[in-house]
Structure formats: C-alpha cells, structure tokens
Image (cartoon, rainbow, N blue to C red):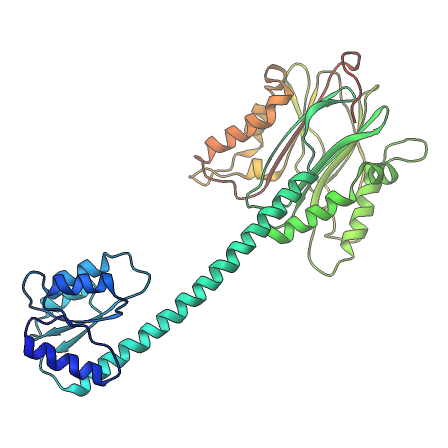
Length: 392
C-alpha cells in the first residue's frame, strides 16, 4: 500500500487487513519498490502523486523487475484526466480507483485482482508442467534421432571398386529419409534411397522401419533372382504390397538399383523419387528414370526396371526432392538445372566432395535458413577396380 498520507495509509491498510490480506505500508514509490523486491507482494495499490517516485514511475520500475510472478497494480487518482490515465496504462497499470471512493469498490477491485492472480498462477503452473513434458519429449526425440542416425551408413569409403559419399540434413530433429549402400555379392553393389511423405516423428518411424527391413539380405532375396539377375522392381513391388496394406495414408518415394562392378550395368527402379544424375568422365550429366508411382500409395501400382550403362570414372548423384524444391527468400526453387550444374563438376571436384558442395550451395541459396524438408545426397563413383580392394 503506497501512500504518502499517513492517515489515509493507516485507514486503507486496516481495511485491507480486514478483508483477510496482509497490507504492507510504504510511504512513497521508492519504499514500495523495495518492498516489492523483498516480499512476495502480488497486488500494489499506489497513490498517483507521491514524493521521490510517483505512481507512474513506480509502475514502470515494477514492470522492469525480473520477477517470477505477476504484480497487479491499482492506481489511486483524484482526477479523471484521460492523458494521465493513458500514461499510466502505457506504464503498465492494471486498474484505477478514485481516491476517497467507497470501500465496496476497493473490496471489489482487490477481489477481482485476486481472481486474476490466481488464474495467472494456475496458468504458470500448467506452463511449467507443459515445459517439463516438452523437455522430456525433446530428449526422447534427440535419442530417437541418434538411434536413427545409427541406422544410416557412414558412406565415405570405397566399396567394391566404387567410391561412395553422402550428406544427410534433417529438417527437424528426426527425419523421414533413409538410404543404404552395400555389397550384395562379390560383383554386385546394391543401393537405395527413400523419402517418406510428411515430416516429424510419424515420418521418421516409417523410415526407421524401412531401414530395419531393407538389409543386404532382404535386398538379395527380393532384388536378385536365383541366376543372380537383378530385379529391383520386384523388391519395390514387394514393399508396395507390404506398406500399401496399412490403414493409414503413409507412402514413400524410392530409387534403388544394382550395379555390376565388372560390366558397369546399372539395373534400377524409380518409384516417384527424383531422377538422379549420371555424370560421365567428361562432365556431361544425364538424368536417369522417368518417374514411377510412390510406394504404398496405390496397391495395384506396377513397377518397371530400367537399365543404364555406368562407365568407369562416371558418378551417380542421388538427391531427395528437398534439393530441387529448396526456395530462396524470393520463393524461387533451386531447381534441377542448378543441381545439374553442380553435378557436372564431379570429375574435377571429386565424387567424395559433391554432397557437401550441394549442401553448401543450398545453404547459400536459402540465405542460411534451415531446409523445409529432409535432404539426402548420395554420390557413387565407379573407379578402376584394380586400384581398390573389396570392403563390405
């Protein structure tokens, strides 16, 4: 209770105490400010005109404090001057009362303030609970992201006469992308890239399920016939049957293939995934594939194999659609032409540097803003098999 008139101060404090509150008297704004700092006072009734620090100045000082609770401020005035009241409201005053008004009005103002304070306290408690739950969820998501990354291969190695490199940039803590590259037999390399529709936890769960399912053993059983003839479309059809039977609307795009390290023959199947670029030793890029249906969207969809000659020193560059769809601040998409231009530098840059080069270009294109979709880039270069040894 900030009031420089001692008699008025005593009278108001007695009235407040009679309502069941504890009134703490202050002779001016400076004393009141110190009491707000030292006590848990949540209601301040202040006279407008006081020495040293007036009511409006006191209000500004209180609003500048770093308190863990809200202070409800009622201003006592002897004037209805709108300019004064507007200045007080801008300073942070919550309510007004004419000085010398009825006790009933004061009681009403205090009880109204109490209800507001109790409501604010309940909201603060709920907020603390929600923040605690949110932190636990974030911790769980970070743990899930770490587990998901463990499923992704560390592709920066030579495998069976192929130099393989990758980049993985999730748009959120967890991702809906998954990819793999591994030896299927002494002379055949298998690879796949998957992009689950949607974002967040739901998409990541499906991508993890795919990562657990599509192992080298599964790839061999489904994409290679008994005579070792590649049939990646058969594996995609099997996945379409498996995931198309679910009751939800989950689906994913996919590009997968089998490369013969001796002949350079690439057998592939494209299921809605963006067409990768195959760049020859001269730096000429050719887009592979013409679309196809996503997996799990249409149960009756059929899938076809494609064939491409993958020569020595050529590089296959696979990018999820986050690359060509990335928009700059002007809402312009990065586009396939810019991707092609970067891909064509692979003979000079080296396949191992292409993924990071694309990531850097997208970061500059978006002026440093995070991508809105998960990004996967895989580069596979066919090198002279006599200069390498097999690794699995």
